[in-house]
Image (cartoon, rainbow, N blue to C red; front, side, top):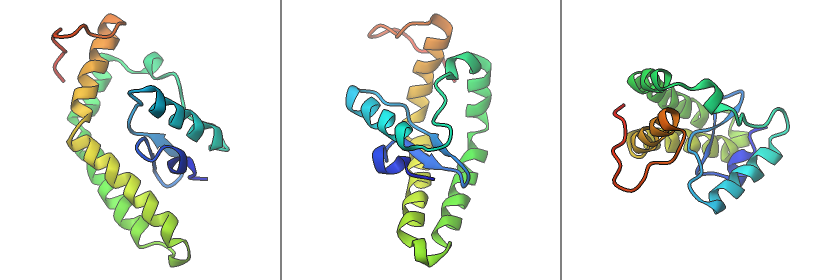
Length: 135
């Protein structure tokens, strides 16, 4: 239904068929917004089991191939801008979400993923000043 961005615009984007979380919450307000988005997603909600599927190697592989994801998101945003003008506001918001995802890939995601790699390896948050793994 592509309703999640109404609740959590800094965290949700649409791939044409599904909603996906492109940015994890970092505080209680963001977590609350993301939970609200999951509640309005009528079909299957969002997965909460990433730690069961992601490995250090898989995260590093994804990061190496991020250029392909970025290219897809840029192209998909351009397509959304050109869709049915009767739903222009919705399509523009969907395009904006994809562009926000691209911006996060360019600035912010690397730091988050380095912290996530630490979590995957140690199963705890890093202490202040503790070295984070390389991507």
